[in-house]
Amino acid sequence: MKPSGASIDRLIASPPSDLQVFLVFGPDTGLVRERANMLAGKLIADPDDPFAVSRLSDEDLKSDPASLADAMAALSLGGGDRLVRVRLSGDSTLVAGWLAEFEAGQTPAEARLVIEAGNLTKGSKLRKTAEDGKRSAALACYADNPRDLVEIAEASLKAEGLSLAPAARPLLAQLLEGDRQLARSEIEKLILYKGPDGGEVTAEDLAEIASSGAEAALDNVIEPALSGNPRETDRNYQRALESGLNPVAIVRALQRKIDQIDAFHAAGNDPAALARSGAPRFGPPAQRFQAMARQWTPPRLARARQIAFDTERALKRSGAPAEALTGETLLRLARASSSTR
Image (cartoon, rainbow, N blue to C red):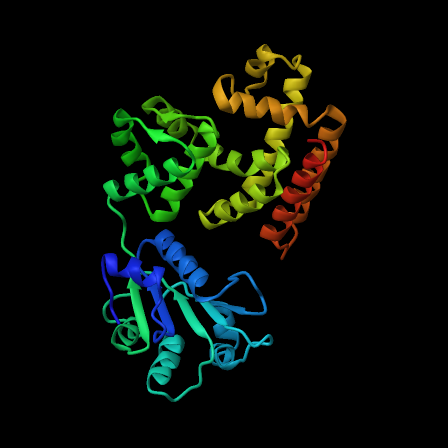
């Protein structure tokens, strides 16, 4: 099956019961990830349930070529639905071979399968098998045009009680250039910047966001951790990893933020201290920084700084699980900060 255009969105919203395999591919890796996640949420009650969902990568398939067939043939321990998710960096003759056998009725399949892949050519055996299959669908993901991305942004802003000023639309279209995942990240940064009572998003707001660059993306992870919000910390950290941010860069940004809060305390803890410490001085960013600083007294900051340094040292060890170590540190600080709110 080879849906296109709006039919792809309709299929994802209500996956046909006779389709068992979904190949999501294309040059827009952010859209590939987003659509694969949406599909998973429609195909199974809890897409994060490790007992109902099996996840395989390129490395898993290389080390154990039978892992896909085994995962697809396995029955659910609880008797419910099962889902297998495969993430590929490119084409895969192994997955294509399994899919051809599945379509020919030569291999059992108890679960449903979502495959994420990159930009597969028309000559790709995996793509062609999915497109021609009776129980498979190939969902192509190509880059959104600027107007589509602005419409996505406006819908997200509206859901948060925000609106977009007409004069800001052209600048927002420039800011959202790139794949769907990067666009979503920019939209999230804008929502965080404006805050819950932000009102209208202006061209000046967008200029401020654009000038913040990578540091603002890092702040989206660091600020919830130091503000006592474990759930938002975990969500933003996962998004940061998916957008390509390095765990080491996140830890170093955490250290800089701790030093900045410390400098703010040393400079007098007043509005003038914001400028002296290099913190935001106006609007919601300044309010968030001051609220965060109130939760971290100098003695607690010293402990947080030590935790961040210990994490960075651990990350430099050979074979250290960087993503897990950094995530654990962020959640540890978020929980510590939450206890003082």
